[in-house]
Image (tube, rainbow, N blue to C red; front, side, top):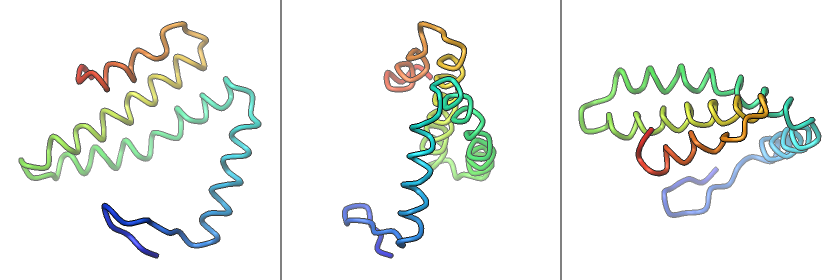
Length: 100
C-alpha cells in the first residue's frame, strides 16, 4: 500500500471491494435512513478526534480542532437532513466559513 501527501494512495483489493459495497448499500437506503446512519457513524470518529485533540501539542491543536469540527458538522447536517429541516447545509457552511 502506497501513501504520501502528494502521491497516489492505493488500497488493498478487499478494502476497495468492501468500500464499494458499503457505498452501494448506503446509496440504496431511503434518504432519511441513510442520514440517520451517517449521523450515528460519526460517534466513533468524534471520540477518537476528541482524544487526539486532548493529547495534541499546541502547534497541532488547530488541526485536530478542525478535524473534530468537521465531524461535528457532518453529524449536524445528517441529523437536520434526517429530520427534514430546510437549513441542513448551515453546519457545513459554517465550517467552511470558519464559523464552526
